[in-house]
Length: 170
Image (tube, rainbow, N blue to C red):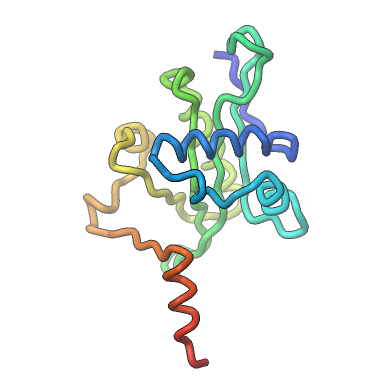
């Protein structure tokens, strides 16, 4: 597989947004729940204060049966652990279904790991749906903290976040 892993560019944001929408359909997320737009992706990734890093997997035309192009991506941002310091948080690792099983996801997660090490991170963290193949991440050295340590992931949706913020008297 002659796959190139390279940094995402502003021009790639249109494809990344397409993938985000594909993922949302897969997880039965209503289209109205996907708040990210092309403009937001561009500003948040390439504006004055970038909020994420992104790498894409690109294949030459003869391998995609079209004009060539991006078949996957890994999008991440930095978080902070009070125990470990700086971490890289992978929000999305995605390879189009027809290109899975060809080591593309492995190469994308390796690129994210290289970026994490280069920026002094002590850990790479991510959450995945129970329906996803966890064995892939385990084979790369990842540990399922839910199973190992009993950690749970909590999420405050926008309405709950706003209510919580509004209650503050400080």
